[in-house]
Amino acid sequence: SYELSQPPSVSVSPGQTASITCSGDELGDKYVSWYQHKPGQSPVVVIYQNTKRPSGIPERLSGSNSGNTATLTVSGTQALDEAEYYCQAWDSGSAFFGGGTKLTVL
Amino acid sequence: QAQLVQSGAEVKKPGDSVKVSCKASGYTFTSNGISWVRQAPGQGLEWMGWISAYNGNTIYAQRLQGRVTMTTDTSTSTAYMELRSLRSDDTAVYFCARGGSGSAAYMDVWGKGTTVTVSS
Image 1: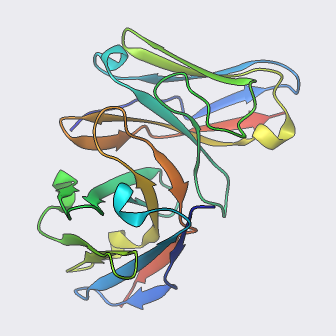
Image 2: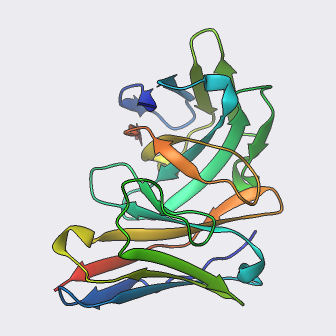
Image 3: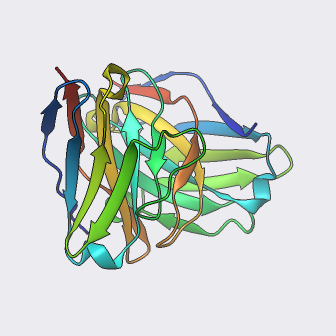
């Protein structure tokens, strides 16, 4: 089993920058995806292969991955960014999700 | 555009089995695989496994090995997930998601989810 650790919650003021971290053993050697999940909806991939954004995802969402930590950065945070965010990576042929981080826009 | 339509909610008793379907449209079904992911109430996302829609190869999460079976029917572009010997902690929303397997893979299209409730 491969463990991915995320902080349970992150708070940010509108217009400010929020950073959500995801830690795992030698995570920098793997590809990380990030999913945004709002209550009652399906998850949406917002970052894949560490830094790539699917079409329709705004540029203010960005990703990085180095060492043991991957980071999702939300710049110019808006109310619509409030959601649970999950990191995900593959290890030994299986997929693993982090525990999720609740992003609150105050 | 690509979409995945899942079957409706299920209520089961402990020890029962459940089979959830996921019908694909808007893309070539056999060009991708399908992952199954579940979310128990108040919990995070849990990956259950993956099936290749091309050749039926499967990968199951270790903790579900022996209780879960994933299949596809290419004639109807439908994927299925069967979970046996249900327990109360299998109560969850079950999602199917399009994607590959392996290090660079990600899940880019998701179904709306199927609620499975296990209760005596």
